[in-house]
Amino acid sequence: MSETLALPPRLVVRDLLLTAATQKGRVILICFCVMAIALAAAVIVKPDYKAKSSLLVLMGTEHTFRPAAGQQFMNSGGVDAEQILRTESGIMGSDDLHRSVIREIGIGRLYPDLLKPPTLLQSWYRDARRLIAEWTGTGKDGAALENDPMAQAVELFARNLTITVDKKSSVIGLEFTNPDAAVSAEALRVLEAQYFNLRAKLYGDVQAPIVRRQQDAVAEQLSAANKALEQFKQQHDISNFADRRTILLRQQGDLEAALAKSEATVAGLQARLEQLNQQFAAVAGNRKNASAALQSMVNAYRQRQEEAATTYRGSPAVDEARRQAMERQTDIARMQATQAYGVETDRNKTDADMRAAVAGRDAIQQQLTSLKSQIDALNNEEMSLHRLELNRAILEDNYRAVTKILDERQVVETVEANRESSVRVIQPPREPALPQPTRRLILLAGVVVSMLLSVGSILLAHFFRSTYLRPEALEVDTGLTVLAAVPEMPALRGGGPIMITAS
Image 1 (cartoon, rainbow, N blue to C red):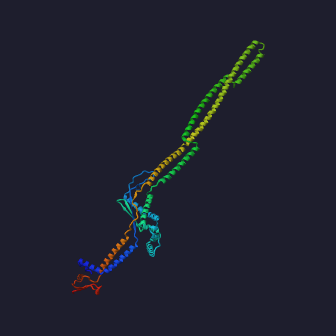
Image 2: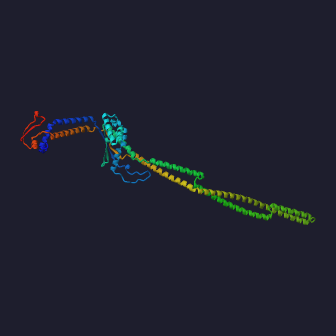
Image 3: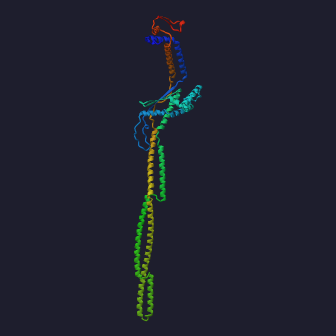
């Protein structure tokens, strides 16, 4: 019937309608079968419920540069909203987050079919998939996925979860589909709760424990430095270097003054002793002491007395004169002896004082020598003491600096912990009241498929039939004039109308 389309459009449409009338039984059968299959599928399929929620993503400090503890904030440029939305949607779409949600809700509630033993058809399907996977080289991954209900649940959860990002309004929409309405809403609630917890961990900038460990390390070093300095002072008997040095210098000055005074005293006593020696020599002559001078005088007096008694005996005047002269000489000798004893006593006392002064001077010199040795030793140990004190001072400054940083960091982290998240829930998940129009879509698909198959069957019957339904078509194909047409009768059913043409 290649020339049929050459007819006017109204005749073609009429032929198609005639073909549809002749094929009405087949069309009805096709529509009935397709709609029956669609109705059965709609009855068998369990409708899903879709829970919805939306989140508002604002610009927060977690999206900017955060310096380390103790460093100053530096503006390194902000992050645009598109990057933030991609980051947040990536966190919500992570498998670990989905796995934690499935664990909290339970596989038995989300996907109970995964825990049921497989049917015969499912076993065949799995065997076929395993065989194909082995041929393609992915058999291990496929076997692991089939044997692990959690992996299958994570894959199904990702399929059922829909994340939409609106870049203009900075809103992220969440949708989750599940046959159970309560479970679908609960899945979104748990997902958001787990998302906020995971987000807090990812964006959390907890540095206080690190600074606290630094503080403990510096405190330990400071304690060791204090202990070393204390041991050094105890070993060298130094409570404070400056005070000890001042005390030693004061003692040195006192000893030097005492030494000078003692030397002056010794010099004065030496001069006094020389003077007394001269006086003693003048009184006692060449004799060593006053008793010797007195003894010589007494001997001279006795000798003269014996001479007067023997030589001038008999002359009273002479004897009397000599006796008086001898008495005067005796008085003079007695006076000289008394003076000699006094001078000798002063000399002995002065000599004893001088020996005591010399002994004191020697003791002062020994003390001064020992004190100078201590000062020299203290000067030699000054660098070690200064190094220990400097180390302790540096550690004290470090400890104060670390403590200040720790206090500031604790305040910052406390504020961040109590601060509201930059992601806000606009619409919390609610249990959907109506299921998804899955059954209506299946029925609609059945209607569309039945119509398509019916039209296809009509077109096939029209273009591939062996009879003519209209005389015009016969005239076009043969080029002859149709004189008469015998209408279709029950006796001729199935063969179409009979056309009579003029030859």
